[in-house]
Amino acid sequence: MQDVISLDKLKIGEKVKINKIQSPEIPAKFYELGFYPGSLIEIKHKAPLNGPICVNILENNALIAIRKSEAKLILAEKIY
Image (cartoon, rainbow, N blue to C red):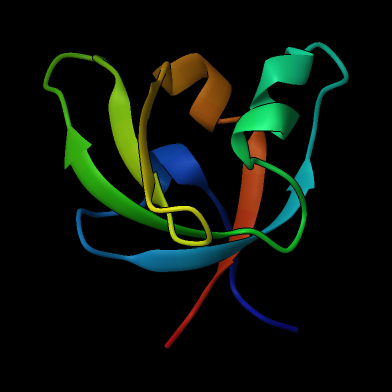
């Protein structure tokens, strides 16, 4: 089994493949933006003091900022 980790725990520059979204409360717009199982994501920026996390969805090269509380609900496996 691969290392499964939530997006909020990743470091800048790490690339992952989304495995699962743990909560049905995540808005549908996340799926529309490209946050779905199998999506490849790279962490670009992390704001200090519990601020948002900027991720790059590699399939469509979109930069998106998400709340840390939402990033905790998205599980992914690291790509080496």
